[in-house]
Image (cartoon, rainbow, N blue to C red; front, side, top):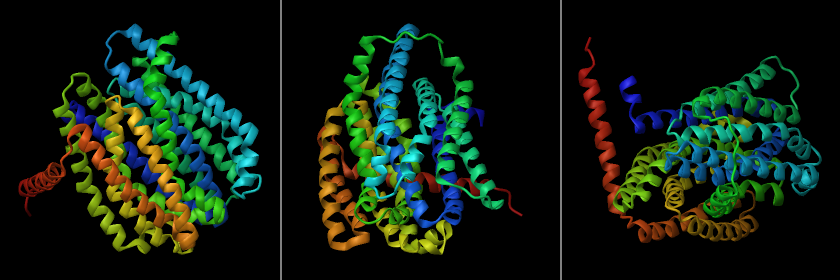
Length: 450
């Protein structure tokens, strides 16, 4: 095992995949417990809370994490690396402070806008400590990944998930009453514990001095400004259906969409893990002006993802009620058709996710921003029309249409930028299946027979 973990690709894939897997696994388990502990109305509000906080954190990460990794991984001078890390941390803290101020001023208004009363605002306000802990968690994770180390992020994330799961399980099996505000508080505590674990594993990379510079603050914003904007747009796009259901139908129905979305995350595990592995390597290939290697990285990674995504999606499409019943129980049968439509989009998402990630690594964040902005505008119009025409399922139908149109747009963009060839992706996919077959066949032949 030690031999395999010495390989960057295997080591990084091992930790990032299992980090994503743990997020999804414990997300499933928590969903199973919460759907049986909370009412559908409460689950709808909890889903809105997770959507709002998730959009903020993922957007901030898009600005800082990618810029931090790109610059630190391409510079060997420790002094300069310390300047970059300090500048990144300062921006991280400033953006979080701004979001906290927005919560204090407008969270109650947001609750009224989503027709949730005062509870959504209270949850956001009690989550402020978690936002502060997340500053340190996200910074330390970026420090590790910029040094091509993924172990600490996995450990910190695992501690977060295990703690939150144990709390929910305790309340469920002891039949204690559980409020949404309590859930947001425990979410904060879990992030704090994860940050401590991540700090303990990251100390070898920390210089323990703060010397942020205006030069690097400007450089990070120059690189990450469009990434920040495209991150906001992309994350709103990914959650647009739930936000529009909460606003135009009822917050209660967000729960059904959230259940389908959580199951859909199963298909996205390899895609998000691949993004974190690919970004540092693609950044170095671009710095070396090796376009052929960039094209190979993209086509190969998309092919590997499709090799796993397509069979998984087709299996879930064939048995949607089995999954919704097992995960959320009989009360969430309305989520089955939504899940089927989400699985269709899940087949096309890996190519789009990797395209945006790769173009960001090539310094083409402006192109990604405008593409995502146009995609969001298109999705808003399509979803609104579909909601008016089809009602409850309209947002899911609109998401499928918008995803297919977005996939076509991204294909032509990548064809122009890196010379993407679909037949190469197809060939790599077939090679992936052949390689898997050879490995499994070889393993079976070597196994002792009884």
